[in-house]
Image 1 (cartoon, rainbow, N blue to C red):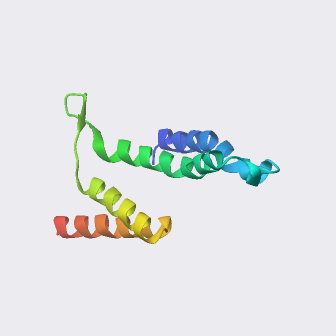
Image 2: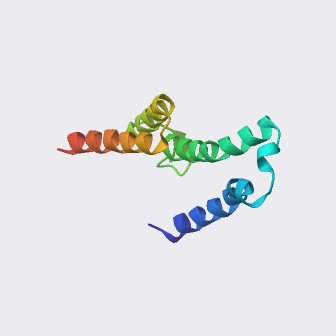
Image 3: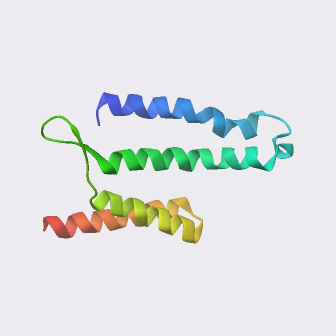
Amino acid sequence: MTASLVLLAVLMAAVTYPSRAIPMLVPGVDRWPPFAIRYLQLMGPAVLASLAAANVAVVTAPDGGRAVTLGVDAIGVVVCVVVTRWRGNLLLGLACAIAVVAAWRAFASG
């Protein structure tokens, strides 16, 4: 792990924490309009989806430019989205995605 990845994780936590903390810090949030509550509920998954898309689809090409490629990581993201939507459980979706990618890599290398 590089220092830039740790810095990115800290930065993302600082950026997304206020929207996640609003329901705990603001009294009467249950009386807010439904669209505002729904927006706050979807903030976390939206950030996760954008990070996943950027990390699995955009890679640095050998000439120093950027290229879009789809591989087993993209399959893992799709598995995570499908299982999470089907079962309503993000942890289960992540576990299934990790299992699919790990199995793919184990069979591909051996």
